[in-house]
Amino acid sequence: MSTTPLEWKFSQVFGERAPGEEIQDVDIISTIEFEKRGAYLATGDRGGRIVLFEKTDGKDHRSQKELENLDYPAMGHPEYRYKTEFQSHEPEFDYLKSMEIEEKINNVRWCATPNSSLFILSANDRTIKLWKVLENKVKKVKEMDPNPSVCVENALLAEKSFIAGQNEPSVPNGHRLEWTNKMPKSILPSSQEAHPMIYNVGDNSSARCRRVYSHAHDFNINSISNNSDGETYISADDLRINLWNLEISDQCFNIIDTKPSNMEDLTEVITSAEFHPAYCNLLAYSSSRGYIRLVDMRQSALCDHQHSRMLQDREAHGSRSFFTEIIASISDIKFTSDGRHILSRDYMNLKLWDLHMETSPVATFKIHEYLRPKLCDLYNNDSIFDKFECCLSGDGLHFASGSYSNVLRVFSHGAGSDDGTTLEASKNPNRKQVLQTAPKAARSLSNFARGHHRRGHDNLNADSSGIPCDLNAKLLHVAWHPTSSLIACAAANSFFGVLCGIHPMLTLGGT
Image 1 (tube, rainbow, N blue to C red):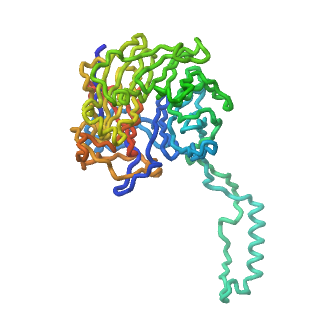
Image 2: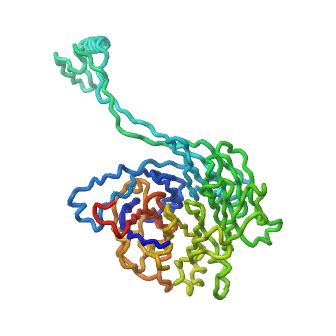
Image 3: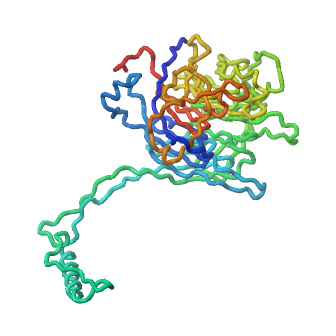
């Protein structure tokens, strides 16, 4: 099926940073996720905080002059505003293993609910928490007259007490207060009793922890995924995948265990896991060797390799080297909305898999092929172990993933070009891509709550090691709006922006 590529424009940016501020590690965004309807957006950071955004009414409140100066038509795409934030995790210490557990949020997932309640699952390296976001109506008393009888009594007592002491110095220096015969009107009884006037100030959101799921993982949790039944979810670490019930926090079922009896025989680890969007008995998980395994929980209580189907790119060609298995490690997988395909991301490529084809992907999109001659340098500075996420549109026809220099790569299935679209996470995403240095700036929570527009960086230089990109500006985390052509992206330097895609055939005022 032929697909027309989208034209991308800058939409919003959050986390405006003042020039000269130093980067704070706790402010760096570590995960990002849209709610299933796209009405809310959640982000987690390394400081253990979760920040929520909500979609606005969609009305453009800018002046006519500002709209005329825009370089793209105002198409009414979704826009978001700050809603609330809360501290999800705190740093802990495992005394049994003498190990510190940092508060960094690894995953955030929205839970499906039958009503308008908002539930969020958040996980750090060891603990998963279920949060409920509460909506509180804030009201303020604008005007209130006291009870007339009480008013008269209090006024007489005050007058008597004041007159009795007016001949005595009221302050230590001997000065006396001046008495006036007229009492303030505010304390005099009114002939017409007025009722209190209360008006709404606005909505105030808060979060309450409902469940804590802990002590079930010996290794770092790398992914959590909600089931389509709305009752269960899975959590995966390097060697195990556990099945939880949302209502039960003190027990879980281990459904996948890849830990060998002798750890020296360990050849691969689990890197990501995802439930099928429609069938509650199916799930997929990826490995560090580039495999994707499909599991049917109805076949066995313990779904080991004997009870799974494996998707493997057996047609991968090229000379093998020391780095072959490292760059083949899959960092993220995503199901399409219909559950027919899986999108996977390794260090070099973005691959689209058909569940009915186990031998090779149906499409491969090259992202870091230009870095292949520099794998040795990337290994020495640990950049080769960077884990980039991937995302895809609701119709399953467009895919996106991040790269270095704050670059976002967007591809369209069947568009006729494997090069895709290269965008920069800045106000002008379509400008000519050149090398970019890492900004020396930080995002504070107060700045993160603002939604100001921001200009792209102008200081662009090459990396000193000869690598043709800025390795410090990593666009690791991306999320695609479930129903609109809208991508939210978060870079390792704490930049957070939103890009909107429009069909090139649309004109101003089109729908």
